[in-house]
Length: 197
Image 1 (cartoon, helix red, strand yellow):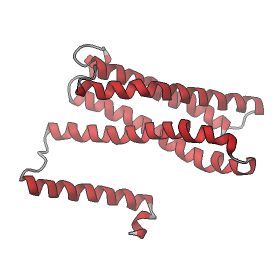
Image 2: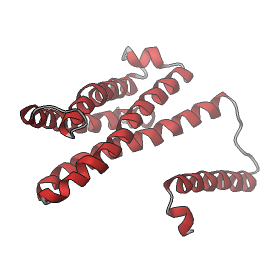
Image 3: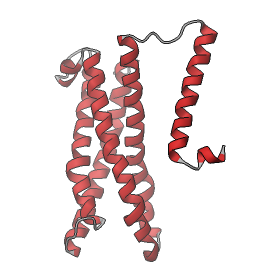
Image 4: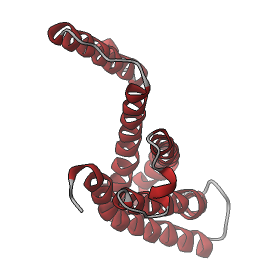
């Protein structure tokens, strides 16, 4: 087991194998397995959307609830480990989780036939439409404000000290803005199918 858990790739593969085994056991007990049609495809896309969203918002909240508040408490000689190793890796997964969440969400809405109605904020899918627009604004912020400014703040792109400080502040404020938007966004996503609006 230690050999599996010491590798992220093997851990993820083990999680997928456990999922498959549990689905097979459940199918054996109930006598009915998944029916691989359109409904299952839409369900699977929803699952991918949720997994991507958990990664994206989980990292957003990690940055805002853990990393940013902890930075002033870290001794200066230890800060390069965050800026040169941890933050660039976390930002990679953050960016692509945002992209994956948006792509899977749009595909899911298209597969279920409500993409145009949701983006048009029309009934009966206006709640998820609001959530979609909030998520699109957040994803735009990730790719076009946070990431370009983080590259400067982390020294990936060389800039003067004053511009580096300003970029770090802009990235932080935009990240906080996204954290603020994540609360109504998540509510609207869940409200649509659970009578919350």
